[in-house]
Length: 592
Ligand SMILES: Nc1ncnc2c1ncn2[C@@H]1O[C@H](COP(=O)(O)OP(=O)(O)OP(=O)(O)O)[C@@H](O)[C@H]1O
Ligand SMILES: [Mg+2]
Image 1 (cartoon, helix red, strand yellow):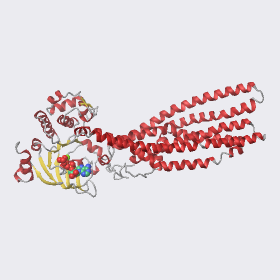
Image 2 (cartoon, protein in one colour):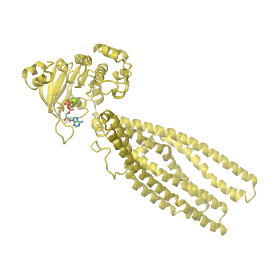
Image 3 (cartoon, helix red, strand yellow):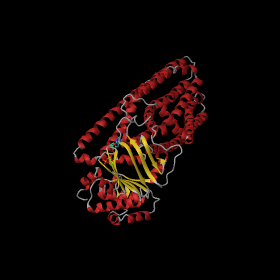
Image 4 (cartoon, protein in one colour):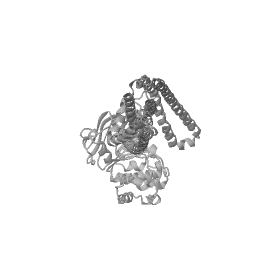
Protein backbone atom coordinates (compact mmCIF):
# COMPACT_ATOMS: atom_id res chain seq x y z
CA UNK A 1 0.00 0.00 0.00
CA UNK A 2 1.12 3.53 -0.52
CA UNK A 3 0.48 7.05 0.53
CA UNK A 4 -2.26 7.46 -2.04
CA UNK A 5 -4.23 4.97 0.04
CA UNK A 6 -5.14 7.44 2.70
CA UNK A 7 -4.75 6.13 6.23
CA UNK A 8 -8.03 7.48 7.49
CA UNK A 9 -10.19 6.61 4.54
CA UNK A 10 -13.83 7.07 5.44
CA UNK A 11 -15.02 3.65 4.33
CA UNK A 12 -17.86 2.96 6.81
CA UNK A 13 -17.73 -0.77 6.11
CA UNK A 14 -13.99 -1.08 6.58
CA UNK A 15 -13.52 -4.41 8.32
CA UNK A 16 -10.68 -5.23 10.61
CA UNK A 17 -7.91 -6.96 8.71
CA UNK A 18 -7.61 -9.77 11.27
CA UNK A 19 -4.75 -11.43 9.46
CA UNK A 20 -2.53 -8.36 9.43
CA UNK A 21 -3.49 -7.43 12.98
CA UNK A 22 -2.93 -10.96 14.24
CA UNK A 23 0.42 -11.07 12.46
CA UNK A 24 1.51 -7.90 14.22
CA UNK A 25 0.17 -8.84 17.66
CA UNK A 26 1.52 -12.38 17.63
CA UNK A 27 4.93 -11.11 16.52
CA UNK A 28 4.91 -8.69 19.44
CA UNK A 29 4.18 -11.52 21.87
CA UNK A 30 6.69 -13.88 20.29
CA UNK A 31 9.39 -11.22 20.55
CA UNK A 32 8.88 -11.52 24.30
CA UNK A 33 8.17 -15.21 24.54
CA UNK A 34 10.31 -15.68 27.67
CA UNK A 35 8.44 -13.28 29.98
CA UNK A 36 5.05 -14.25 28.58
CA UNK A 37 5.84 -17.97 28.98
CA UNK A 38 6.81 -17.47 32.61
CA UNK A 39 3.54 -15.63 33.21
CA UNK A 40 1.65 -18.46 31.51
CA UNK A 41 3.35 -20.94 33.84
CA UNK A 42 2.33 -18.98 36.94
CA UNK A 43 -1.19 -18.79 35.66
CA UNK A 44 -1.40 -22.48 34.85
CA UNK A 45 -0.24 -23.27 38.38
CA UNK A 46 -2.89 -20.96 39.82
CA UNK A 47 -5.63 -22.44 37.63
CA UNK A 48 -4.78 -26.04 38.41
CA UNK A 49 -4.74 -25.23 42.12
CA UNK A 50 -8.15 -23.60 41.98
CA UNK A 51 -9.55 -26.58 40.11
CA UNK A 52 -8.74 -28.76 43.12
CA UNK A 53 -11.34 -27.02 45.28
CA UNK A 54 -14.48 -28.83 44.01
CA UNK A 55 -12.68 -32.16 44.42
CA UNK A 56 -11.93 -31.29 48.05
CA UNK A 57 -15.57 -30.24 48.51
CA UNK A 58 -16.77 -33.55 47.10
CA UNK A 59 -14.42 -35.40 49.47
CA UNK A 60 -15.85 -33.53 52.46
CA UNK A 61 -19.50 -34.13 51.50
CA UNK A 62 -19.30 -37.66 50.19
CA UNK A 63 -16.44 -39.19 52.21
CA UNK A 64 -15.40 -37.31 55.34
CA UNK A 65 -18.85 -36.27 56.59
CA UNK A 66 -20.74 -39.60 56.09
CA UNK A 67 -17.84 -41.48 57.71
CA UNK A 68 -17.87 -39.03 60.66
CA UNK A 69 -14.11 -38.71 59.99
CA UNK A 70 -13.11 -35.58 61.97
CA UNK A 71 -9.40 -35.87 61.18
CA UNK A 72 -10.15 -36.35 57.48
CA UNK A 73 -12.39 -33.28 57.61
CA UNK A 74 -9.68 -31.24 59.32
CA UNK A 75 -7.08 -32.32 56.78
CA UNK A 76 -9.45 -31.40 53.94
CA UNK A 77 -10.13 -27.94 55.42
CA UNK A 78 -6.37 -27.44 55.90
CA UNK A 79 -5.80 -28.53 52.31
CA UNK A 80 -8.49 -26.16 51.15
CA UNK A 81 -6.85 -23.20 52.89
CA UNK A 82 -3.38 -24.19 51.70
CA UNK A 83 -4.54 -24.54 48.11
CA UNK A 84 -6.28 -21.16 48.26
CA UNK A 85 -3.20 -19.40 49.64
CA UNK A 86 -0.95 -20.96 47.03
CA UNK A 87 -3.43 -20.01 44.37
CA UNK A 88 -3.38 -16.38 45.48
CA UNK A 89 0.41 -16.37 45.55
CA UNK A 90 0.74 -17.65 41.98
CA UNK A 91 -1.94 -15.28 40.85
CA UNK A 92 0.05 -12.38 42.27
CA UNK A 93 3.23 -13.52 40.53
CA UNK A 94 1.42 -13.81 37.25
CA UNK A 95 -0.17 -10.34 37.41
CA UNK A 96 3.17 -8.73 38.27
CA UNK A 97 4.97 -10.60 35.52
CA UNK A 98 2.37 -9.64 32.93
CA UNK A 99 2.36 -5.98 33.89
CA UNK A 100 6.09 -5.92 33.23
CA UNK A 101 5.92 -7.84 29.95
CA UNK A 102 2.91 -5.78 28.78
CA UNK A 103 4.53 -2.41 29.47
CA UNK A 104 7.70 -3.59 27.83
CA UNK A 105 5.81 -4.64 24.71
CA UNK A 106 3.93 -1.36 24.45
CA UNK A 107 7.04 0.76 24.95
CA UNK A 108 8.81 -1.28 22.30
CA UNK A 109 5.90 -0.92 19.88
CA UNK A 110 5.73 2.84 20.46
CA UNK A 111 9.42 3.18 19.75
CA UNK A 112 9.11 1.10 16.61
CA UNK A 113 6.08 2.99 15.35
CA UNK A 114 7.74 6.32 15.98
CA UNK A 115 10.93 5.26 14.25
CA UNK A 116 8.89 4.03 11.32
CA UNK A 117 6.97 7.29 11.07
CA UNK A 118 10.16 9.34 11.21
CA UNK A 119 11.54 7.38 8.28
CA UNK A 120 8.57 8.27 6.10
CA UNK A 121 8.75 10.82 3.29
CA UNK A 122 7.41 14.31 3.72
CA UNK A 123 4.64 13.17 1.40
CA UNK A 124 3.36 10.91 4.18
CA UNK A 125 3.16 13.88 6.53
CA UNK A 126 1.35 16.06 4.07
CA UNK A 127 -1.24 13.28 3.73
CA UNK A 128 -1.77 12.52 7.45
CA UNK A 129 -2.40 15.20 10.07
CA UNK A 130 0.14 15.18 12.89
CA UNK A 131 -2.53 14.99 15.61
CA UNK A 132 -3.80 11.72 14.20
CA UNK A 133 -0.32 10.30 14.09
CA UNK A 134 0.13 11.26 17.73
CA UNK A 135 -3.07 9.42 18.52
CA UNK A 136 -1.77 6.37 16.66
CA UNK A 137 1.35 6.32 18.77
CA UNK A 138 -0.45 7.08 22.02
CA UNK A 139 -3.97 5.73 22.17
CA UNK A 140 -3.76 2.84 19.73
CA UNK A 141 -0.75 1.40 21.46
CA UNK A 142 -2.32 1.92 24.89
CA UNK A 143 -5.39 0.04 23.73
CA UNK A 144 -3.12 -2.94 23.25
CA UNK A 145 -1.93 -2.77 26.86
CA UNK A 146 -5.06 -4.53 28.14
CA UNK A 147 -4.53 -7.22 25.55
CA UNK A 148 -0.97 -7.94 26.56
CA UNK A 149 -1.31 -7.65 30.32
CA UNK A 150 -4.54 -9.49 30.63
CA UNK A 151 -6.23 -10.97 27.65
CA UNK A 152 -3.55 -12.98 25.85
CA UNK A 153 -2.57 -15.15 28.79
CA UNK A 154 -6.05 -15.22 30.29
CA UNK A 155 -7.42 -16.69 27.10
CA UNK A 156 -4.88 -19.50 27.16
CA UNK A 157 -5.69 -20.02 30.80
CA UNK A 158 -9.43 -19.93 30.14
CA UNK A 159 -9.12 -22.58 27.48
CA UNK A 160 -7.12 -24.66 29.92
CA UNK A 161 -9.60 -24.12 32.74
CA UNK A 162 -12.51 -24.97 30.51
CA UNK A 163 -10.92 -28.17 29.22
CA UNK A 164 -9.74 -29.38 32.62
CA UNK A 165 -13.10 -28.59 34.25
CA UNK A 166 -14.98 -30.38 31.53
CA UNK A 167 -12.48 -33.27 31.59
CA UNK A 168 -12.90 -33.76 35.33
CA UNK A 169 -16.71 -33.60 35.02
CA UNK A 170 -16.58 -36.07 32.18
CA UNK A 171 -14.39 -38.32 34.30
CA UNK A 172 -16.82 -38.31 37.25
CA UNK A 173 -20.06 -38.61 35.32
CA UNK A 174 -20.34 -38.86 31.56
CA UNK A 175 -24.09 -38.62 31.22
CA UNK A 176 -24.41 -35.60 33.47
CA UNK A 177 -21.67 -33.86 31.41
CA UNK A 178 -23.58 -34.60 28.21
CA UNK A 179 -26.45 -32.48 29.51
CA UNK A 180 -24.16 -29.48 28.90
CA UNK A 181 -23.09 -30.31 25.35
CA UNK A 182 -25.76 -28.42 23.34
CA UNK A 183 -24.70 -25.16 25.02
CA UNK A 184 -21.36 -24.96 23.19
CA UNK A 185 -22.31 -24.63 19.51
CA UNK A 186 -24.77 -21.89 20.55
CA UNK A 187 -21.89 -20.08 22.24
CA UNK A 188 -19.57 -20.31 19.26
CA UNK A 189 -22.25 -19.05 16.91
CA UNK A 190 -23.03 -16.08 19.14
CA UNK A 191 -19.35 -15.16 19.45
CA UNK A 192 -18.84 -15.31 15.70
CA UNK A 193 -21.89 -13.16 15.02
CA UNK A 194 -20.81 -10.59 17.56
CA UNK A 195 -17.30 -10.28 16.12
CA UNK A 196 -18.66 -9.97 12.59
CA UNK A 197 -21.23 -7.29 13.39
CA UNK A 198 -19.01 -5.15 15.58
CA UNK A 199 -15.82 -5.24 13.50
CA UNK A 200 -16.62 -2.14 11.36
CA UNK A 201 -17.95 -0.39 14.47
CA UNK A 202 -14.66 -0.85 16.27
CA UNK A 203 -12.73 0.40 13.25
CA UNK A 204 -14.92 3.50 13.31
CA UNK A 205 -14.32 4.02 17.03
CA UNK A 206 -10.56 3.84 16.52
CA UNK A 207 -10.76 6.34 13.68
CA UNK A 208 -12.79 8.78 15.73
CA UNK A 209 -10.50 8.20 18.69
CA UNK A 210 -7.66 9.50 16.50
CA UNK A 211 -9.70 12.25 14.92
CA UNK A 212 -10.54 13.95 18.21
CA UNK A 213 -6.92 14.59 19.28
CA UNK A 214 -6.08 15.24 15.62
CA UNK A 215 -8.64 18.02 15.39
CA UNK A 216 -7.61 19.34 18.79
CA UNK A 217 -3.95 19.58 17.78
CA UNK A 218 -4.80 21.38 14.56
CA UNK A 219 -7.04 23.88 16.31
CA UNK A 220 -4.62 24.53 19.16
CA UNK A 221 -1.80 25.03 16.66
CA UNK A 222 -3.91 27.63 14.96
CA UNK A 223 -5.13 29.25 18.16
CA UNK A 224 -3.69 32.61 17.15
CA UNK A 225 -5.76 32.67 13.97
CA UNK A 226 -8.85 31.38 15.77
CA UNK A 227 -8.71 34.11 18.37
CA UNK A 228 -7.87 36.83 15.89
CA UNK A 229 -10.99 35.99 13.90
CA UNK A 230 -13.14 35.11 16.94
CA UNK A 231 -13.70 31.60 15.67
CA UNK A 232 -13.27 29.84 19.02
CA UNK A 233 -16.98 29.06 19.16
CA UNK A 234 -16.93 27.41 15.74
CA UNK A 235 -13.98 25.31 16.73
CA UNK A 236 -15.59 24.13 19.94
CA UNK A 237 -18.85 23.42 18.11
CA UNK A 238 -16.92 21.20 15.69
CA UNK A 239 -15.15 19.58 18.60
CA UNK A 240 -18.50 19.00 20.27
CA UNK A 241 -19.80 17.39 17.11
CA UNK A 242 -16.78 15.11 16.85
CA UNK A 243 -17.13 14.15 20.50
CA UNK A 244 -20.80 13.39 20.03
CA UNK A 245 -20.01 11.17 17.08
CA UNK A 246 -17.35 9.38 19.06
CA UNK A 247 -19.73 9.08 22.01
CA UNK A 248 -22.50 7.49 19.97
CA UNK A 249 -20.07 5.16 18.21
CA UNK A 250 -18.71 4.05 21.59
CA UNK A 251 -22.22 3.62 23.01
CA UNK A 252 -23.27 1.48 20.08
CA UNK A 253 -20.28 -0.77 20.51
CA UNK A 254 -20.89 -0.99 24.26
CA UNK A 255 -24.57 -1.83 23.75
CA UNK A 256 -23.72 -4.70 21.45
CA UNK A 257 -21.21 -5.86 24.03
CA UNK A 258 -23.78 -5.81 26.83
CA UNK A 259 -26.36 -7.53 24.67
CA UNK A 260 -23.93 -10.24 23.80
CA UNK A 261 -22.76 -10.64 27.38
CA UNK A 262 -26.33 -10.80 28.73
CA UNK A 263 -27.32 -13.52 26.28
CA UNK A 264 -24.31 -15.53 27.34
CA UNK A 265 -25.12 -15.05 31.02
CA UNK A 266 -28.61 -16.37 30.30
CA UNK A 267 -27.08 -19.68 29.30
CA UNK A 268 -25.77 -20.45 32.78
CA UNK A 269 -29.14 -20.76 34.60
CA UNK A 270 -30.30 -22.98 31.75
CA UNK A 271 -27.30 -25.24 32.27
CA UNK A 272 -27.76 -25.14 36.07
CA UNK A 273 -31.40 -26.15 35.70
CA UNK A 274 -30.25 -29.06 33.55
CA UNK A 275 -27.81 -30.25 36.22
CA UNK A 276 -30.37 -29.85 39.02
CA UNK A 277 -33.06 -31.57 37.00
CA UNK A 278 -31.11 -34.49 35.64
CA UNK A 279 -28.72 -34.84 38.61
CA UNK A 280 -31.58 -34.51 41.10
CA UNK A 281 -33.57 -37.34 39.45
CA UNK A 282 -30.47 -39.49 39.51
CA UNK A 283 -29.96 -38.81 43.24
CA UNK A 284 -33.63 -39.68 43.90
CA UNK A 285 -33.15 -42.89 41.96
CA UNK A 286 -30.08 -43.61 44.11
CA UNK A 287 -27.78 -43.62 41.09
CA UNK A 288 -25.77 -40.55 42.10
CA UNK A 289 -24.43 -39.00 45.30
CA UNK A 290 -25.27 -35.47 46.45
CA UNK A 291 -21.52 -34.70 46.46
CA UNK A 292 -21.30 -35.28 42.73
CA UNK A 293 -24.21 -32.92 42.01
CA UNK A 294 -22.67 -30.21 44.24
CA UNK A 295 -19.30 -30.75 42.60
CA UNK A 296 -20.91 -30.41 39.19
CA UNK A 297 -22.61 -27.19 40.21
CA UNK A 298 -19.26 -25.84 41.40
CA UNK A 299 -17.53 -26.92 38.19
CA UNK A 300 -20.29 -25.32 36.20
CA UNK A 301 -19.01 -22.06 37.66
CA UNK A 302 -15.52 -22.93 36.47
CA UNK A 303 -16.88 -23.82 33.07
CA UNK A 304 -18.77 -20.57 32.67
CA UNK A 305 -16.16 -18.34 34.23
CA UNK A 306 -13.86 -18.58 31.20
CA UNK A 307 -16.86 -18.20 28.90
CA UNK A 308 -17.96 -15.00 30.64
CA UNK A 309 -14.42 -13.74 30.65
CA UNK A 310 -13.97 -14.61 27.02
CA UNK A 311 -17.11 -12.79 26.01
CA UNK A 312 -15.91 -9.84 28.05
CA UNK A 313 -12.53 -10.16 26.38
CA UNK A 314 -14.12 -10.28 22.97
CA UNK A 315 -14.59 -6.53 23.18
CA UNK A 316 -10.97 -6.04 24.28
CA UNK A 317 -9.95 -8.35 21.46
CA UNK A 318 -12.02 -6.43 18.93
CA UNK A 319 -10.62 -3.15 20.24
CA UNK A 320 -7.07 -4.45 20.14
CA UNK A 321 -7.44 -5.91 16.69
CA UNK A 322 -8.86 -2.69 15.33
CA UNK A 323 -5.95 -0.80 16.91
CA UNK A 324 -3.53 -3.45 15.65
CA UNK A 325 -5.16 -3.18 12.22
CA UNK A 326 -4.45 0.56 12.09
CA UNK A 327 -0.93 0.21 13.45
CA UNK A 328 -0.18 -2.58 10.98
CA UNK A 329 -1.47 -0.32 8.21
CA UNK A 330 1.02 2.38 9.14
CA UNK A 331 3.86 -0.09 9.57
CA UNK A 332 3.12 -1.45 6.10
CA UNK A 333 3.67 1.94 4.50
CA UNK A 334 7.02 2.09 2.82
CA UNK A 335 8.80 5.36 2.20
CA UNK A 336 9.06 5.90 -1.53
CA UNK A 337 12.51 7.36 -1.13
CA UNK A 338 14.93 4.86 0.35
CA UNK A 339 18.63 4.24 0.22
CA UNK A 340 19.86 2.46 -2.92
CA UNK A 341 21.28 -1.08 -2.73
CA UNK A 342 24.90 0.01 -2.51
CA UNK A 343 24.70 3.60 -1.34
CA UNK A 344 27.47 6.06 -1.93
CA UNK A 345 28.37 7.80 1.31
CA UNK A 346 28.83 11.48 0.81
CA UNK A 347 31.32 13.13 3.16
CA UNK A 348 31.62 16.48 1.50
CA UNK A 349 31.07 18.19 -1.80
CA UNK A 350 34.51 18.37 -3.37
CA UNK A 351 33.72 19.73 -6.80
CA UNK A 352 30.19 20.77 -7.59
CA UNK A 353 26.46 20.27 -7.36
CA UNK A 354 24.87 20.00 -10.76
CA UNK A 355 21.27 19.97 -12.02
CA UNK A 356 20.90 18.89 -15.66
CA UNK A 357 17.54 19.23 -17.42
CA UNK A 358 15.55 18.37 -14.31
CA UNK A 359 11.78 17.98 -14.62
CA UNK A 360 9.61 17.55 -11.57
CA UNK A 361 5.96 17.33 -10.59
CA UNK A 362 4.49 16.50 -7.18
CA UNK A 363 1.90 14.08 -8.53
CA UNK A 364 1.77 12.04 -11.66
CA UNK A 365 -1.35 13.71 -12.97
CA UNK A 366 -0.49 17.27 -12.00
CA UNK A 367 1.40 19.92 -13.94
CA UNK A 368 5.18 20.17 -14.09
CA UNK A 369 6.51 22.34 -11.28
CA UNK A 370 10.08 22.36 -12.60
CA UNK A 371 10.75 22.36 -16.31
CA UNK A 372 14.20 21.57 -17.62
CA UNK A 373 16.12 23.19 -14.78
CA UNK A 374 19.92 23.21 -15.18
CA UNK A 375 22.65 24.85 -13.16
CA UNK A 376 26.07 24.09 -11.73
CA UNK A 377 27.30 25.24 -8.35
CA UNK A 378 31.03 24.72 -7.77
CA UNK A 379 32.30 24.18 -4.24
CA UNK A 380 32.78 27.34 -2.24
CA UNK A 381 30.53 29.43 -4.48
CA UNK A 382 27.03 30.69 -3.92
CA UNK A 383 23.90 30.75 -6.01
CA UNK A 384 20.94 33.02 -5.31
CA UNK A 385 17.57 31.82 -6.61
CA UNK A 386 15.02 34.51 -7.33
CA UNK A 387 11.55 34.42 -8.72
CA UNK A 388 7.83 34.83 -8.18
CA UNK A 389 5.91 33.15 -5.42
CA UNK A 390 5.09 29.57 -6.31
CA UNK A 391 7.69 29.66 -9.07
CA UNK A 392 9.45 26.53 -7.83
CA UNK A 393 12.35 27.88 -5.75
CA UNK A 394 11.75 25.78 -2.66
CA UNK A 395 11.10 22.77 -4.88
CA UNK A 396 14.60 23.04 -6.41
CA UNK A 397 16.14 22.83 -2.97
CA UNK A 398 13.81 20.05 -1.81
CA UNK A 399 15.09 17.93 -4.67
CA UNK A 400 18.66 18.42 -3.53
CA UNK A 401 17.72 16.91 -0.15
CA UNK A 402 15.68 14.23 -1.89
CA UNK A 403 12.61 15.17 0.11
CA UNK A 404 10.89 14.42 -3.18
CA UNK A 405 12.04 12.67 -6.32
CA UNK A 406 12.19 14.17 -9.78
CA UNK A 407 10.97 12.49 -12.95
CA UNK A 408 13.40 13.49 -15.68
CA UNK A 409 16.98 14.71 -15.88
CA UNK A 410 20.00 14.35 -13.61
CA UNK A 411 21.15 15.73 -10.32
CA UNK A 412 24.78 14.99 -9.53
CA UNK A 413 27.13 15.74 -6.69
CA UNK A 414 30.77 15.47 -7.77
CA UNK A 415 29.55 13.46 -10.73
CA UNK A 416 27.66 10.92 -8.59
CA UNK A 417 23.97 10.45 -9.31
CA UNK A 418 22.01 11.86 -6.35
CA UNK A 419 19.84 8.72 -6.31
CA UNK A 420 22.93 6.64 -5.55
CA UNK A 421 23.83 8.68 -2.47
CA UNK A 422 22.80 7.47 0.96
CA UNK A 423 20.01 9.70 2.25
CA UNK A 424 21.52 10.01 5.71
CA UNK A 425 24.92 11.11 4.43
CA UNK A 426 23.33 13.50 1.95
CA UNK A 427 21.31 15.27 4.61
CA UNK A 428 24.27 15.24 6.95
CA UNK A 429 26.46 16.90 4.35
CA UNK A 430 24.02 19.62 3.32
CA UNK A 431 22.52 21.96 5.88
CA UNK A 432 19.12 23.58 5.61
CA UNK A 433 17.72 26.80 6.98
CA UNK A 434 14.04 26.71 6.16
CA UNK A 435 11.58 29.44 5.36
CA UNK A 436 9.33 28.49 8.26
CA UNK A 437 11.72 28.17 11.13
CA UNK A 438 10.94 25.62 13.77
CA UNK A 439 12.59 25.84 17.16
CA UNK A 440 12.28 23.06 19.70
CA UNK A 441 11.50 23.60 23.37
CA UNK A 442 14.80 23.88 25.26
CA UNK A 443 17.42 26.58 25.66
CA UNK A 444 18.82 28.77 22.90
CA UNK A 445 21.99 26.70 23.25
CA UNK A 446 20.07 23.43 22.72
CA UNK A 447 18.57 24.88 19.57
CA UNK A 448 21.89 26.08 18.26
CA UNK A 449 23.23 22.55 18.64
CA UNK A 450 19.96 21.08 17.32
CA UNK A 451 19.83 18.91 20.46
CA UNK A 452 23.19 17.30 19.74
CA UNK A 453 24.88 17.36 23.15
CA UNK A 454 28.16 16.11 21.68
CA UNK A 455 28.83 19.51 20.09
CA UNK A 456 31.19 21.42 22.41
CA UNK A 457 30.07 24.84 23.66
CA UNK A 458 33.26 26.33 22.25
CA UNK A 459 32.03 25.59 18.72
CA UNK A 460 28.89 27.58 19.43
CA UNK A 461 30.91 30.51 20.77
CA UNK A 462 33.26 30.38 17.77
CA UNK A 463 30.35 30.38 15.33
CA UNK A 464 28.75 33.36 17.05
CA UNK A 465 32.04 35.29 16.94
CA UNK A 466 32.68 34.41 13.27
CA UNK A 467 29.24 35.67 12.33
CA UNK A 468 29.55 38.80 14.40
CA UNK A 469 26.44 37.97 16.41
CA UNK A 470 27.88 38.59 19.88
CA UNK A 471 25.55 41.54 20.40
CA UNK A 472 22.45 39.56 19.55
CA UNK A 473 23.29 36.70 21.87
CA UNK A 474 23.98 39.11 24.72
CA UNK A 475 20.37 40.17 24.45
CA UNK A 476 19.20 36.59 24.08
CA UNK A 477 21.57 34.61 26.29
CA UNK A 478 22.34 31.03 25.41
CA UNK A 479 20.58 29.70 28.51
CA UNK A 480 17.32 31.46 27.63
CA UNK A 481 14.41 29.06 27.48
CA UNK A 482 12.79 28.67 24.09
CA UNK A 483 9.15 27.65 24.21
CA UNK A 484 7.51 25.21 21.87
CA UNK A 485 7.79 26.37 18.26
CA UNK A 486 9.82 29.31 19.57
CA UNK A 487 6.61 31.07 20.61
CA UNK A 488 8.46 33.46 22.93
CA UNK A 489 10.71 34.79 20.16
CA UNK A 490 9.97 37.10 17.27
CA UNK A 491 10.24 35.84 13.69
CA UNK A 492 13.41 37.85 13.15
CA UNK A 493 15.00 36.46 16.30
CA UNK A 494 14.14 32.93 15.26
CA UNK A 495 15.80 33.62 11.92
CA UNK A 496 19.00 34.79 13.54
CA UNK A 497 19.08 31.69 15.75
CA UNK A 498 18.49 29.37 12.83
CA UNK A 499 21.21 31.07 10.78
CA UNK A 500 23.64 30.77 13.65
CA UNK A 501 22.61 27.13 13.97
CA UNK A 502 23.67 26.55 10.37
CA UNK A 503 27.14 27.78 11.24
CA UNK A 504 27.31 25.72 14.45
CA UNK A 505 26.29 22.50 12.73
CA UNK A 506 29.29 23.04 10.51
CA UNK A 507 27.98 21.66 7.24
CA UNK A 508 29.98 22.78 4.23
CA UNK A 509 27.01 23.09 1.95
CA UNK A 510 24.02 25.09 2.98
CA UNK A 511 20.60 25.71 1.56
CA UNK A 512 19.00 28.89 2.80
CA UNK A 513 15.35 29.65 2.20
CA UNK A 514 15.34 33.27 3.18
CA UNK A 515 12.16 34.52 4.79
CA UNK A 516 10.55 37.58 3.27
CA UNK A 517 9.44 39.55 6.28
CA UNK A 518 11.14 42.82 7.02
CA UNK A 519 12.91 43.35 10.30
CA UNK A 520 13.80 46.30 12.43
CA UNK A 521 17.21 47.72 11.45
CA UNK A 522 18.98 45.97 14.33
CA UNK A 523 17.74 42.49 13.59
CA UNK A 524 17.98 43.16 9.90
CA UNK A 525 21.66 43.99 10.31
CA UNK A 526 22.22 40.85 12.38
CA UNK A 527 20.51 38.72 9.75
CA UNK A 528 22.23 40.36 6.80
CA UNK A 529 25.59 39.98 8.48
CA UNK A 530 24.86 36.37 9.36
CA UNK A 531 23.86 35.48 5.81
CA UNK A 532 26.86 37.25 4.32
CA UNK A 533 29.12 35.41 6.68
CA UNK A 534 27.55 32.05 5.75
CA UNK A 535 27.91 32.81 2.04
CA UNK A 536 31.57 33.68 2.59
CA UNK A 537 32.36 30.50 4.47
CA UNK A 538 30.29 27.88 2.71
CA UNK A 539 28.88 26.55 -0.51
CA UNK A 540 25.43 28.10 -0.48
CA UNK A 541 22.20 27.98 -2.41
CA UNK A 542 20.05 30.79 -1.14
CA UNK A 543 16.49 31.60 -2.05
CA UNK A 544 16.94 35.30 -1.76
CA UNK A 545 14.56 38.10 -0.90
CA UNK A 546 17.11 40.67 0.32
CA UNK A 547 19.11 42.88 -1.93
CA UNK A 548 22.21 42.39 0.17
CA UNK A 549 21.92 38.62 -0.14
CA UNK A 550 21.46 38.79 -3.89
CA UNK A 551 24.49 41.06 -4.18
CA UNK A 552 26.68 38.77 -2.05
CA UNK A 553 25.93 35.72 -4.16
CA UNK A 554 28.34 34.72 -6.90
CA UNK A 555 25.60 33.97 -9.36
CA UNK A 556 21.91 34.57 -9.67
CA UNK A 557 19.24 32.28 -11.12
CA UNK A 558 15.82 33.66 -12.06
CA UNK A 559 13.01 31.12 -11.96
CA UNK A 560 9.55 31.70 -13.27
CA UNK A 561 6.81 29.15 -13.81
CA UNK A 562 9.30 26.39 -13.04
CA UNK A 563 11.70 27.46 -15.77
CA UNK A 564 15.16 28.97 -15.44
CA UNK A 565 14.79 32.28 -17.23
CA UNK A 566 18.17 33.78 -16.56
CA UNK A 567 21.41 32.64 -14.95
CA UNK A 568 24.53 34.72 -14.43
CA UNK A 569 26.30 37.27 -12.26
CA UNK A 570 24.55 40.39 -11.09
CA UNK A 571 26.36 42.54 -13.63
CA UNK A 572 25.74 40.13 -16.51
CA UNK A 573 22.04 39.99 -15.77
CA UNK A 574 21.69 43.73 -15.32
CA UNK A 575 23.42 44.24 -18.63
CA UNK A 576 20.96 41.86 -20.24
CA UNK A 577 18.15 44.13 -19.13
CA UNK A 578 15.76 41.19 -18.92
CA UNK A 579 13.63 39.67 -16.17
CA UNK A 580 16.26 40.12 -13.46
CA UNK A 581 16.84 43.75 -14.33
CA UNK A 582 13.09 44.37 -14.14
CA UNK A 583 12.74 42.42 -10.90
CA UNK A 584 15.73 44.20 -9.45
CA UNK A 585 14.35 47.62 -10.19
CA UNK A 586 10.89 46.73 -8.94
CA UNK A 587 11.95 44.96 -5.80
CA UNK A 588 14.97 46.90 -4.74
CA UNK A 589 14.41 50.08 -6.75
CA UNK A 590 14.83 52.53 -3.93
CA UNK A 591 17.44 50.59 -2.05
CA UNK A 592 19.48 50.18 -5.24
N1 LIG B 1 4.11 19.35 -1.27
C1 LIG B 1 3.55 19.83 -2.40
N2 LIG B 1 2.61 19.10 -3.03
C2 LIG B 1 2.05 19.58 -4.18
N3 LIG B 1 2.36 20.75 -4.75
C3 LIG B 1 3.28 21.52 -4.14
C4 LIG B 1 3.93 21.10 -2.94
N4 LIG B 1 4.79 22.05 -2.59
C5 LIG B 1 4.70 23.03 -3.52
N5 LIG B 1 3.79 22.71 -4.46
C6 LIG B 1 3.45 23.53 -5.64
O1 LIG B 1 4.60 23.65 -6.45
C7 LIG B 1 4.75 24.97 -6.93
C8 LIG B 1 6.11 25.53 -6.54
O2 LIG B 1 6.18 25.64 -5.14
P1 LIG B 1 7.46 26.15 -4.37
O3 LIG B 1 7.23 25.92 -2.94
O4 LIG B 1 8.65 25.51 -4.98
O5 LIG B 1 7.43 27.71 -4.71
P2 LIG B 1 8.42 28.85 -4.25
O6 LIG B 1 9.02 29.37 -5.49
O7 LIG B 1 9.32 28.36 -3.21
O8 LIG B 1 7.41 29.94 -3.66
P3 LIG B 1 7.59 30.96 -2.38
O9 LIG B 1 8.40 32.10 -2.87
O10 LIG B 1 6.19 31.38 -2.12
O11 LIG B 1 8.20 30.20 -1.29
C9 LIG B 1 3.59 25.77 -6.38
O12 LIG B 1 2.63 25.89 -7.40
C10 LIG B 1 3.07 24.94 -5.23
O13 LIG B 1 1.68 25.07 -5.14
MG1 LIG C 1 9.43 28.74 -1.07
